[in-house]
Image (cartoon, rainbow, N blue to C red; front, side, top):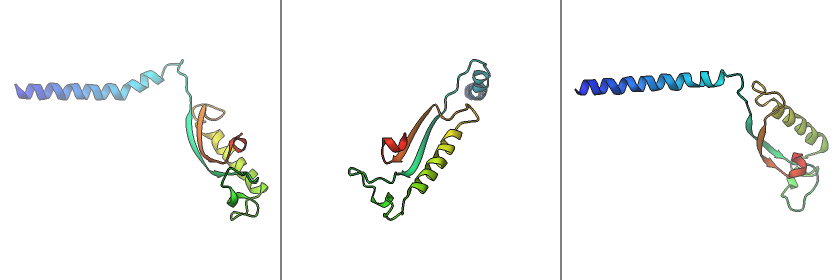
Length: 111
């Protein structure tokens, strides 16, 4: 009797495993499936070159530790925008639908 119980449990587990493996194929094969790309990206100290009194941005000023200047700032903006626009492009064109970011000095820098 115990062998039959083990066999039944094993059969159910295998069946469940097969269903869980194949279910995404059926769900994503439908033509009316909509895709959204949600991303998170660390912008790694994205600071402008303007001294903000409410922000500890001294090392990102032209005379600061990083000798941060307009050329470096615009180069970083260009690089970051290129990378962000390519996130998830194998699923949708035009960049992520929703993106969270970190390490940004202020809203103006992000915009």
